Image (cartoon, rainbow, N blue to C red; front, side, top):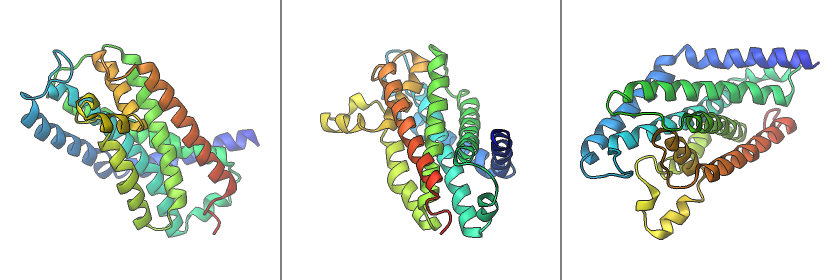
Length: 256
């Protein structure tokens, strides 16, 4: 049974990767273009007016934030859109008839979401690095936070896809939860520049720790300790993954 589960998870994983790769112009190229536009607009306007870290230009500061934002948004979009499409079109029944455990579903969906998020993030980095000098001061933090962030948002996308029954509900989840948490996490600014109340609010946002820890890998500087960021992001990943696994195990809104 374990061998069947492993083989099934691998097959479902490949199917999910092919699902977004076959329309890569939309799922990969479009987010990269969006990030480049953000960089060109904000970098051009603020490059000579903002210095967050000593000796680091604003455009250079902005690149890691845009990369991580792209990773998070696309990891979430992959698992959530796949599940809601399968529920609406009715082809989810074929997965329900297969001898796959909830753990195999989780590994396949979250794994494919992480792949999409990391591919898009890599594309954003490859394009935007031409606009600003970057070097990897502590590269291990880049890898750790990129992987944890992609995995967490893939799991969160699973929860959203299970909960939503139509595209409007999924859009509401993304527009009122994921998008605000992403944009209020320090992508475009340092939270130290905020008033005290908003600084405190930002420190309640796990997305802030993902982006701050990821940025630490490039500059060797961050708003908070990377170990604190790792503890918060790691704990958040465990909690979100546990919720997703529990919902999958119970068949929440899968068999209705």
